Image 1 (cartoon, rainbow, N blue to C red):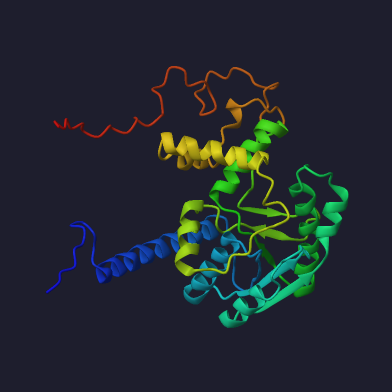
Image 2: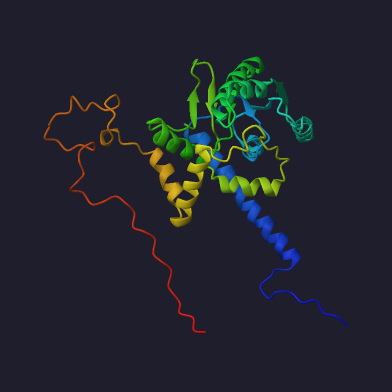
Length: 307
């Protein structure tokens, strides 16, 4: 007679499977809610829109398409989705992965073949950051493809963490308070770009990609550039979040609560024309008001364990 020993707190395989399914269901609901909220808050997609979902092969764009398909099935507005991938002719790029995935999914798609890889490698010196030129080339090509496909919206897979990283990159290295808006018009005024994942945390996308087992394609062009400023900023934000949980949520909320009168940009607030009125104003100095910062979270009760 034999016995199987298991850890006391370890769930049985069936219980573990059920728990994982419950967690995945909660995650799916949260992702759909946040994406739907962003679409509603910024009026990203309307009836009759044709949304071109830019699919790179990374976790974020896979998740974007996945969630938009779920919302399309239940949304009151009738809109189309078409997936577009730009094959930049990077050495070793698995050309079959995305067509096979999208065909199996039953999603209309277009693969655009353009050798931007050679251009970037030719123009950028070894060791220099390639992202800026690469992104400009991609953007121009995608705008053209959107015209050819008759797309009224171009959906990108940037998430909340991307938006905050861009904000700090521009502040630290560009001297601007500028980020990635959830919705914007292109420079030529002809294309509407949307970021439906604007409210979604990257850690949730990592979990969703693992659960859905997306066929991830790594970017071999710039993935080896470990000293990119964006990676340094991302590490800084992760460390802040580790030390002060909820800090990233607060910072993103701050991007939605701008007070021009308490910054220093004279093009957005008339500091030169500022005059005394004797009337209370929301733009005034609040030095005598109680602070608006929320109280810090209470620390958990400490327990003394005697050994």
